[in-house]
Image 1 (cartoon, one colour):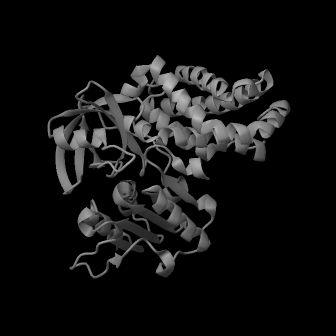
Image 2 (cartoon, rainbow, N blue to C red):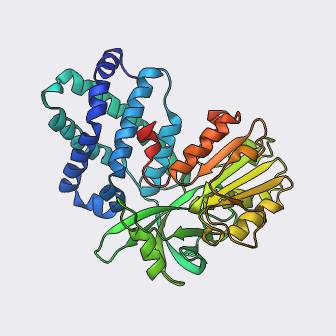
Image 3 (cartoon, one colour):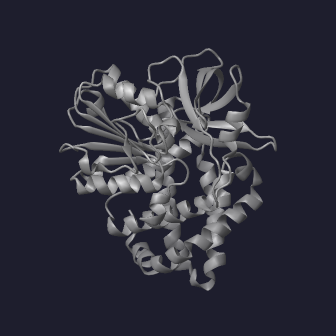
Length: 404
């Protein structure tokens, strides 16, 4: 993929460029938003920008992609690219925006690294960028085509048909297309983007998993109110939805995307055991998977694992347990940091798989905070689950790449 000449240059400069990437991405976003303030207002997550998470994720993805090109010259990191492409498609990213990113990214590289950016170095890293960008553009083009929409044209108006308070900080919104057309299909585990207009005029976007069955006439999302903890501010979109959106209101919602989905061999009756592990609001894609599996009469073993602060904080707890119970070979294990009386089967503390049977050949799906997923992944590897069979979803910037 990477030319031999560029590979040698990238290999020689990767340590220096990698070390400078945090400063490069900081300067990149400053220049990008100065030239295009509408991108911060209407596309990028302002909370993640304020906390620095987006800069970490971009630096991590560039370094990870360049490292993969050097270590595996005949392979493309399709898992990483696919995850990013689904996020981009749900935001309506277009090919033209990659040109804008390229302009400001390479201006930032030149500014930070100065004379070290020789024409040869610039050409090599330019090749890395366009290999990554063109691969993403191609995947995103296929994702748009599969939905039957023009590139970037993913938004529809939906009416809020109902709202249910699940916990003190989580609410479910049931949505129906405002134009009366059928709701688009989706795969269990996928998400949609929701765009809201905030009091200052910004149109901010966040992703929320679809928590119901794919065949329903309506769609459901469960939104947790995000209370900021330094360095992160309060969640602008989640607070807006909780405070202002009621039955009868309208929301701009994207087509469904996301690659944390049950694969065809599972959906057509394959016998691989499944483990669905979540924490906090990460349970929502697992609920969609469970509802589909229960409706399809899935008979292979399904182990459900969930961690939360308390039963009262566990959104959709009753559904989580009931759907697992519908499976012929389903088992649920719930851990709570603050357990409550009346739930004798619950466990105390953080998720610990030491006493949980994990059958050979298990395929695992993880969704929750990054420390939780790292812990569960490590435990699963220790139990013999193949790394290729452990799939995860990160909402917001994928900081896993930034630290691996």
